[in-house]
Structures are given as C-alpha cells and as structure tokens.
Amino acid sequence: MSHASTTAESEDSSTIDTALSTESRDDRSSRPDETVIRSSGLDVYYGEDQALDGIDMEIPARKVTALIGPSGCGKSTFLRSINRMNDLIDVARVDGDLYFRRKNVYDADVDPVALRRKIGMVFQKPNPFPKSIRDNVAYGLRVQGKTDDVDGRIEEALRGAALWDEVEDRLGESGLELSGGQQQRLCIARAIATDPEVILMDEPASALDPVATAKIEDLIEDLAREYTVVIVTHNMQQAARISDKTAVFLTGGNLVEFGDTNEVFSNPENDRVEDYITGKFG
Image (cartoon, rainbow, N blue to C red):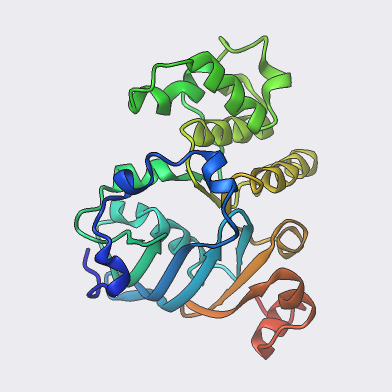
C-alpha cells in the first residue's frame, strides 16, 4: 500500500501504541468533544477500480457517526480504512491521509495490530470464537498479555455489552450456543474488553431479528458515552434513530453530504441525498 505525503500534523512521529496507551476511558471522557478521526483527500483503489474518491471527513469523539448509501458506494471501504483492515486485501491501495487523533495511520511507523487495539471492529455477521463465553471475552486480553483482574475485566466488558445478566451463570458454555443477538453482543464485549477508543461496526444488526436489533441499537447509544462509534448501515431509519452525525456516500465512492443527522434527514443540502433518503433511487 502507498499513501500521499503527510501534512504537518504527522510531525508527531510517536506510534499509535505509544501515543495513546496511557489513556484511560476516564481521561478521554474528561476532555471536551473533539475530532478523533480525520480523513483528507482519501482515495482507495482495488486494483484499477476506485472505491473511494477524495474523502474529507472529521468524526467527533464519543458520538455515533452513521455511514449510509446504496450498495457498492464505499461505506464499508471507508470503515475498513480507519483501522487498516484493507491491508488484508492484496490489491487494495490507499492515497491521501487518515488521522487517528494527530497520527496518520498510514505512516510507516504505525503497527496495524497496535492500531486495531485502539480501534476495535464488530462485523456484520456475529463471529464468536469456538470457545467459552469467558474465553471469547478474554481473548484480546491474553493476546496483549493483560493478566491482572481478568475476571473483573470480563464482567465489565459483558456489562458494557448489556450481556452480563443473561450469561453470568453460563461463562463456561460455548459462545456458539448463544442466540444470534447474544452472539453479536458477545463480539461487542470482546471488542471493548481491551479498552479501545473507537468501535467500528459494519451492519451489526443486519442479520438479527427486530427484538435483537433494538437491543443492539440501545447498546450503541450507551457505548457512545465512552467510545467513538462509527457504524455502516443500509437502514436509514436506524441511522436516524441512533446517530449524531450522518455521512452519505453515493455511487463512485463519493461523500456527498456529512453533518448532523437531524439536518441531513430533514433538510439535506444535496438534491441527490434528498432523492436517496426519500427512496427515489438506491
């Protein structure tokens, strides 16, 4: 992968891990709202095909930002760019800049594994490991060598994912035995157990029934009190319900509109956005 020359902001050459490893959730919540992710002229290509075209966006801390738009418009590509999941695609190429706080995540000294400790991800289909509920949540802690108060961290993560009351007497059972909605909340618990700052969610409720979806939506709103949440969704009603900011991507990997959710849905600036939201195309 390649990227354009970085701007003056990247003069902070500390690595992601060093720059942020000492911050706790209390430290983060005590700061005023600020931009935590910023893209500038971000282009992404898969081979010769351009998936994102010059994306400029500032994502605020401890808010829910929804990415909406028709299939194939670049929403998930942008999401995966934030924690460099596109690195796993051989033909992917990135130009432009994408900052996590003051650090360009595509700088040569950034370890993608360390970056993903700070920017967790929850996928469309629940993907618990074939392990016990306890071991699912503890997995990231063990990878990072965190051995202090593991049981307490597991309970805290399961409570944070609104799952503790349902599984506290079943921690030794396989995570695969849970319902689909519970499995997704288990994956969220696994993501937050290592104390990330950002949680990326790619259609986290698309495979769930309405009751489980409502629980996930309630949980997302709760998570935003401590974490920055960025969610891709095809469900515009869901975006309107749970997000503070909405970004509208349209064909060609273009970011057409970005702003407060209420404004985007009630008074869009772009005619194409209004057509999409009202169902005239998409």
